[in-house]
Image (cartoon, rainbow, N blue to C red; front, side):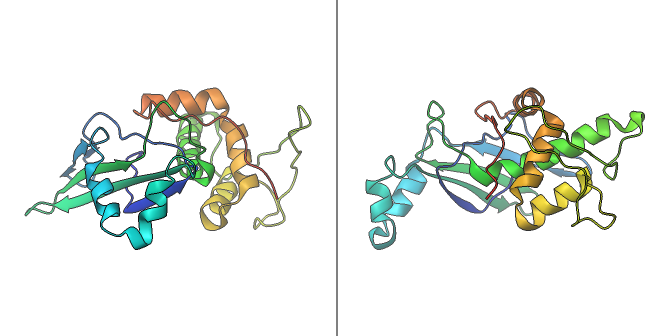
Length: 204
């Protein structure tokens, strides 16, 4: 579930993600996935960018000042259709924190679904009404949601708003539902040792 596949992503002030160390098992599709991490050898992307100085010259010169990262997953398919993934990195430094911005939303959505699965025995599901109180000035209360079909806030509708319009407030509700400790512990369990998700997002 957490094997994030991307074509080519250029992150301006973005966080680093790390592919799980084990080979992903997609038994439900009977496909074996081969994943090779080339984080220590960024030569491919460096060479590619240097070939087009008219487009990428400024990025190469200002990579640190502009906080630019590129993480590219190359997908090759074998004759039998099974995919092989090779990860290429540009300007990725695990010891340096890059602000992940909205890239945190997808893992939070997936963790929210996981948490709901863990709570199913308690009668809680994606459509259960979720009311939010305030514990300090950084939080806001939510007792209704006029954008949902029944006017009630729920995990399902928050997920919908995150995925459809990248809604920051919906993300914040999922963040509160999970809690910082749960989020980061679960990300580490899944092999994302360099990920830190530490706070809510601003509401504009």
